[in-house]
Length: 449
Image (cartoon, rainbow, N blue to C red; front, side, top):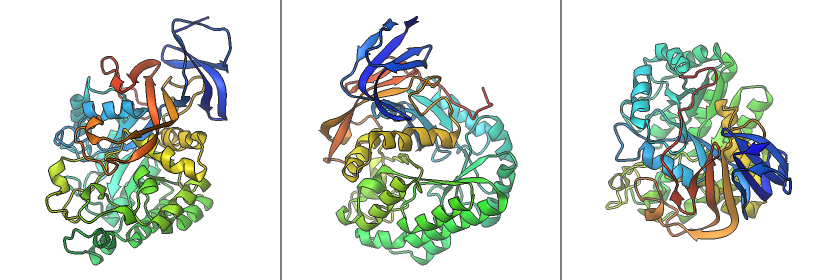
């Protein structure tokens, strides 16, 4: 049999662990995983020096187009994804204008993205006060679930859900096995912890205490237990919440949780006064808390690691003032996630097999993307070559996302994404995108729009 592509490596990361193997591809699918030295006929038969890993799946990306395309956009975000080995992104319903809270708004976003995506793209819907009637139509249109905020989102067009709205939305979604993903910080705790504007990071940290996350996550667990709905806690930064999450899972509550590379690699102790490139919400916390997050990840309480890529224009970071309260909160790491996690995780004994699970298989499972997330027969041939021993210095101007702002500027990271394939076609190699954008829209299973 002739194959369109054969990729061979002495280190192929499969669901069973690392093996020396040949991966054969036809029609964009993996059709064979066999011995490294197998005699195969292929139009293209290459042997790579690095580790062959499944393309990453990032289910937490703010692309912001249309409406705030100067912050980011489908072209720049998906180029950054491809350069980082991310072959699938699911776009958050904000901070675009309009937000994805109706089928009409979803169609507007798809029109804005058409022909611009270097990787495959899916969409979350938004759950806000007053749009409960839009949830089922959005599911039928193919969104993967819904995002809500339990406090102000930062943009007025995406208001916080009330306790009643949240409960009603979960009741609706429970009946159709829909998924709610939640920014879980409690508004009352945040209000009580408010601080005046300041360049002092410790003042900002005190204004977003772990208690805000802990209280909100307890509410999420109560409502998930009551309704039977599936819930997912976004960007966990509080190590204190791990125990109640662990207990809820043991009790059969349908809850999963993610954290992000910045919480696993950056610490409050290193944030200088006025260094607002480090601002995100929830915030980067102390080193001891980071240790707890790593324990939660390695033990399986935390299910996955995604970027929460949330860019803005440099002026919104308020570098002239260095005021953490007025600066936009968000970190752009879509292109850097794998090297960040490998740099931090390898020192803690994490393996590339574990990282592939956290950054590819688990996010694919969350979204029901059964064709993504692993190197095995029948999956899309989304692949990346990773050179784990190579190092590089982060230079923001060389990254593909639109605005060159990064808390990783000047940091030396270990591990380089050398090549990326999307459905068997090379889309990135040695620092450059290859060919025209060929990303496709993805839909919740059962929808083919």
